[in-house]
Image 1 (cartoon, rainbow, N blue to C red):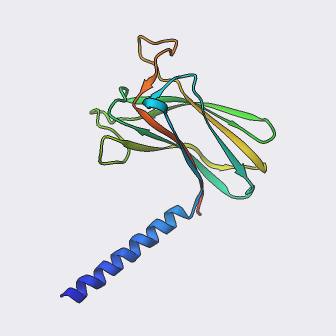
Image 2 (image 1 turned 90 degrees about the vertical axis):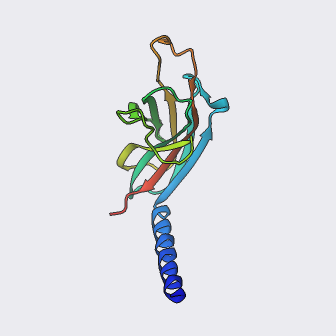
Image 3 (image 1 turned 180 degrees about the vertical axis):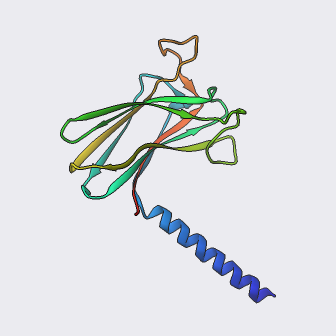
Amino acid sequence: MQTILTKNNCVITLLCTLFLVSCTGAIDYSNYKSIDKHQWFSENEITFIVNNTDTISKKNVFINIRNNKDYEFSSLFLIAKIEFPSGFQVIDTLEYEMTDIEGNWLGSGFTELKENKLFYKENVLFSEKGDYKFNIKHATRSIKDIDGQLPLNGITDVGLSIEKVIE
């Protein structure tokens, strides 16, 4: 009986290891920036510089958000900008749902901290070699804060990850 359990445990461990290796093998870039005191002011852009040498592979770009129970909205509005090595810029206004219809947090995590991996760009080809600059700032406002003077509470970290598309 113990031999069977040991073999099953080995098989499960091997499968988990293969799964983790296969998932992390496609990551080209991953980085997080902490938000001071978990108060993100609208004028505070989060910047990531990504050096690209691969002009052939398609990639998926994700914005990663960690929030705690102090986040007070059901959605999150972001303004994301990519500046290419040539100076060309692409600016997007994005909206992401942070809760389901019943107000339950989306994302992963068993504690009060939730992590959301949000699609930003899908199957994109970075055709220029060099440094790409990604800027992310929030545009989420309460009814009483049209000008964005109050900080967005409860966002603990903002991240960016880029993964090769495996076909």
